[in-house]
Image (cartoon, rainbow, N blue to C red):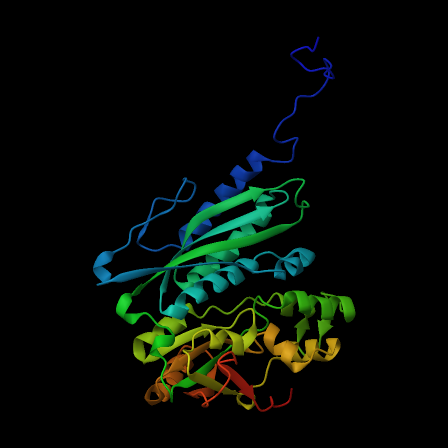
Length: 368
């Protein structure tokens, strides 16, 4: 006969608990309490309630728009988190996360309204969660959106105790008549480049392989070309362009934006160009940051591979009406964002391969 207690249980056997299985509810509760003041800093007047409920509430002020269209975006930061974990520096990854989401929203002209994060960890360490969310809150401030809560999930047995990954979903709004996109682009339009702050959050698998595995470079080692350590360069937060793009669209005739993320400059710009038009971009108009040259040299990475993996120094692109070029550059300069004329849009040649890229780079970078 099998007893109710089970065939192997003894009087001294410990009872199984969630904590013994690796999930610390008390640590999770402490983390939530640490996050509340951070979320309260990254807010907007439309936010109702606070952090900790089952859902975040955001009151859409419909009197601001005639025909509002909601936009949404979801993303993460990829293997850049491996660098943060190696250095035990966690307060910048959240900025990267917001940048990846908010700047995808603004491409269509949408104003980012709110963001919700998801943090998966092997073990909840409240101090580490606090650092991660501090970065997310800072990113939301830079993007002008609210941090409307999120979720922290503990995965013992699936992830190591020091491991984590982050993702987020953001929601924005744009007036239907003001939605930006390929249908607005015309022959003769001018392409403006906006400077990146470095690698941003793409290409880290290749960068880590070249610099750490092949180059054997220590993350805490000083690199003369950077004027700081390799780890500091690799953890440089992604520049957030949302407010700059919205200001530009408000003051000039912007046709569309392109957020330069995975796939590189040409591939991302091609996504926002219509059939029959081609953007020709001049490499000679800018010099990529030293980190790109170092990766290319140490890994013997050819130019095509570099340009299809990294942003190469261009983090955001605006396509503007030709008569507004000077005004657009003045707006961005006043906002302390380096920008320049990158190229132009022209009709595709007759008989051109319809599958060919709609954005083409030509020439050479100076001093690269």
